[in-house]
Length: 185
Image: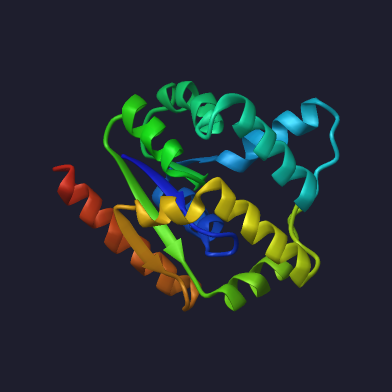
């Protein structure tokens, strides 16, 4: 099974991926890690603004599905269940659907104020430090097409409860995907 996880920043994509990795033995591929790795290879500073700018240039130069194209061969080389997190556009979804089999897209949504607090408190290198940075990131992600990717998702999870609620919702979606694909646990 291959699932793609999309959602606006702070919606809970990483928490969902952690659950899939730790409790369901999925292999996790984070699309943003590819961009961060490229920046590190080039000796570029990684922060909220530089990361979004670099990702924008990649997409301008190589198409909206540039990062997805970079990942296809990596995904094909893996076996078992895989989750691709951080899908940011319908173009990326289409790239994966054309190149890979049995793709299901899960959109995770949460209110803006809740997402801001999560990102502010998370502590990742490129996370925001202020509401202005949050608004900047929101606009960049919208520009990449994240809302379109969420709208194109096969399944939507509203993540406004506890971590246990998110896990339970993920389990329900995985069961629906398995049934749709004619698979058993």
